[in-house]
Image 1 (cartoon, one colour):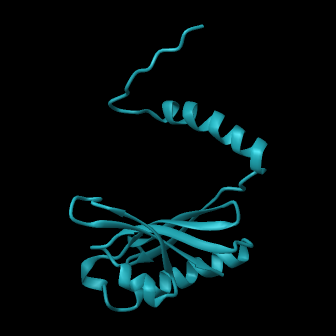
Image 2: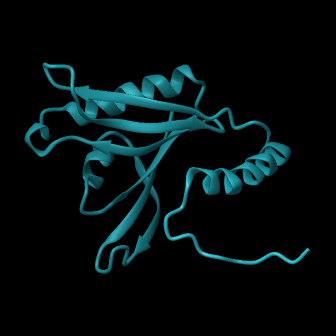
Length: 139
């Protein structure tokens, strides 16, 4: 059978799954089950509405922080530190050996440095004139 290559302008969940399934199966065959566990540490207001927080997943003994967002008016009040500390607790309780993330240099790279993260890779000009940083912290 000949396979074709096409581009999906609006990828569907089914298309994602069609790509994910064989990759996940290969990973399990080569490295064991990654035991993927999503995590969310929520930042809520007095009414219980989620206004920000931390989103990630534990997989292959590491916690990956995919998003950390704090509304501008709440920055500088140690909410970010508290969110990351809670994520560290979750990572430890899931037997993770470390945490990694990526961020742009214009976001909060100094913030992560203060929390003990170290840069292990950099992509220059992403976006143009800026850097994308990859950071890790061993637990």
